[in-house]
Length: 267
Ligand SMILES: Nc1ncnc2c1ncn2[C@@H]1O[C@H](COP(=O)(O)OP(=O)(O)OP(=O)(O)O)[C@@H](O)[C@H]1O
Ligand SMILES: [Mg+2]
Image (cartoon, rainbow, N blue to C red; front, side):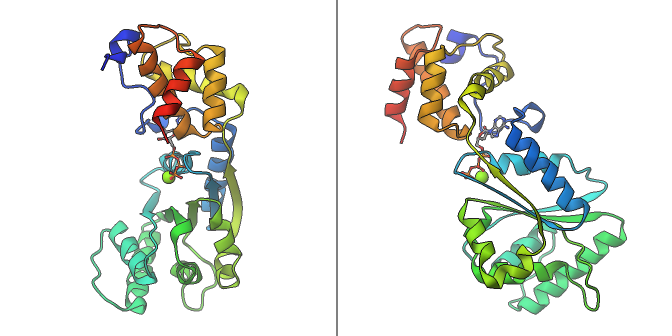
């Protein structure tokens, strides 16, 4: 395969998954989600981020967390599964670096509450961040709010950020999820990029990888926007595959035809 990186003169791999938080492209959605994320944390509430597959939800979580100074916040990140309450509580224990082999939900809850209290006593704010939350069973939604609740004290001290695909909202609307959903103070939905922003987005990724000029023709940008619906992961894959198609033909500009070739390679 043609070494597309040297054809175009990239100094780094372009359009990577592992983009650093300092290098993110600031979309309106990312800005709004971060503001709500930080507000919910500041008042010990719950914030929800939804969006289509590849819209940038996990990246938005990563960005939000990067704004929390580690000396002031203790962030517990969990990627949810379809498992039982017991499993998610064990994952939270792992996130807190505690081993808890108990099979009792009550014991796990007590352990977690104990550590949360210790964190709060050290003047740190614990924050629970759950990605792929749409996978969680309804019984987990029903239980989750009790994590930050302490006997005889109605003031919750555990802000929770939930992120997931759109059906996360359906699960939160279910009546057994009400105690949790009633604490939601900020809801963000990440949309695909608008067509006018796609050019800047692609240029931004090229710049991070060492290229200052636009390598995508206007028609190619339109084709990438149409083929991805503005969703970032798909746009990245189309952009990178079409760069390879252009390099194979020794072209220094990506055309709509290169994007068409790229589209036929992906599902
Ligand atoms: N603000 C941004 N700036 C630049 N690139 C971004 C940004 N947000 C997301 N991306 C790119 O898009 C890719 C997909 O984003 P991400 O994995 O966050 O989507 P997701 O919504 O969590 O997807 P899934 O539904 O599959 O979990 C990232 O790997 C990253 O390369
Ligand atoms: Mg994700």
